Length: 274
Ligand code: AMP
Image 1 (cartoon, rainbow, N blue to C red):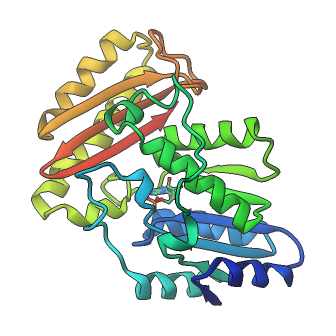
Image 2: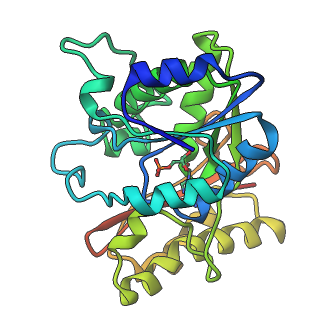
């Protein structure tokens, strides 16, 4: 397994690659959620690239850019065991130039929910993903449904910029209690972890309601709010279709229920696809 920090070295390494390239972009502090993406990339491709880059342009002023967990050694070991061929771990100066040309998130889909609470986040995310997809020359790139809005925007970018890379959505990986795995879970104390379970429980409650015949968003959301009593602050609960248009009536096969909430000083998101 090669560990590459420079763009030129990555370009050189790719010259010898034959066959398909599977690519998994991450910000590191790898967990079983990332690993599921990596395993799938390994199964479906001849060559696997993982990037580890805590991208400064997708963090807002006052967010956790400085404190975001960085675990290069452990991450490298995990990648090696998973059969990754190359890790790309650039510094920001390898990725960005002065006076950048930027692509922006679309007005509606990019500035609601996460995009409304974190204005500019998706612009930075799309900017780096575009660069990384081009650099990796990926045949397929793997993204988690955990970041559902991100996945929708990347899929749209690939479509509207005619990228040749296939965007592959991957299911959310949870711990034994249902908590969606996230690098940010490292910030949670044991007591906070318990309370954080309210996110997945509220989604489960919603999905049980739907399965028992309830379709009205107005009746599902209050049920979720009850379960979410355990968190410190709900940022949003939303029920949308796969294109992120708000729904009034749940339609099975075309609905995503999303929640964002604060537990202590940690902001968590989760969702369920129905
Ligand atoms: P991050 O390192 O948080 O930027 O995540 C890198 C990729 O891993 C993104 O496509 C995420 O959606 C995905 N991911 C993160 N957590 C999970 C999870 N629990 N299950 C599935 N995919 C995940």
